Image (cartoon, rainbow, N blue to C red; front, side, top):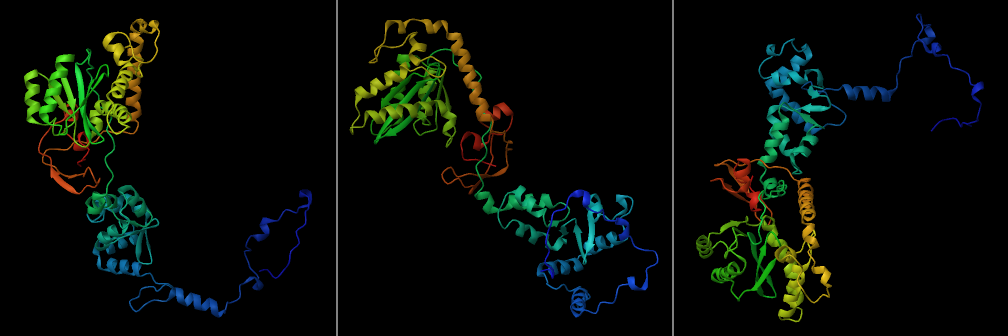
Length: 443
């Protein structure tokens, strides 16, 4: 856009002339020729007139009007607190906070950043909102239904008033749509029994699973991992469960603890009376939270593959099922020992060719090393799980809470905490949290 066409040429640095900065200094006595001539440009006059024009009410009229700012000005003119704050900014804040009126004391901490621009009070680049417009501004900030932190970051770009962060938290917490669509609670740190079983079938787990229209009962030892699988009749009733457990107790011994989920057969009064007669402590996991019965769930996952493979022809092949279970019982776990080695002191003979040396008791002499390896594995599992977990605050009796629907994941139900229960509560001394033990979270 220049009127000239320049040609750039290279010149060595030694030939460059140093400009004299003092030649740009103003002179004390300017000559008549140094005085600027009056500008009579019509465009310049029009711009100045537009920028300095005022309305009938004395309000400065900008070239482009902002209706949002006009509404803030109108609300500010009706707000006595806003007008008082503007006067204090013009005259200067007093030396002591108590010299301010109670309404203006919340602004004391930011007094050095307050200014008045075109009749509006600004805190840095943020506009101070009159009290009558704050509720509407909170709703506008939350139009995107973002979380508390994101909404606060959005507000810090534009608006301010004392306590705005607290008001944003209250607004987001009270939003019914956000509460229903909120994410599930984060996992809590891993909880394990401090007392490990020391004898086979001292502590056992049980669970049901379904394959090809048939129901199976899995009964597994928590020390060795030795599984039993029973095919149930068409209706897996509590009476059939009691019959199967009685047979297993007579073959493997009566356990001290039986752990199951809260299915109808396990929660029945028939099973409760049976276990009371046999002196077995029954611990049920929480509904909709299968991981709290993780030992049985892991066994079900493994056994289910064997059953599916044995049912490939359309009907269950008992030979394939029992051979698969035999190999499962012979397979060493991560700590180096198989269920058969723990129970019998040696592997079991199966269809896999095995030399007689494989039945030697060398593994028993390495039992301490296996125990140390198992302890290290449990420690690694805990560290891996707890890396993304955090403790959750307890709920008090009588608190009104939102309850998460386990199927849809939405917080669309409400409830009241009526009592204390659960292992977490016993450890932490707090009210049981449903989201920890049953998956249908409460908050």
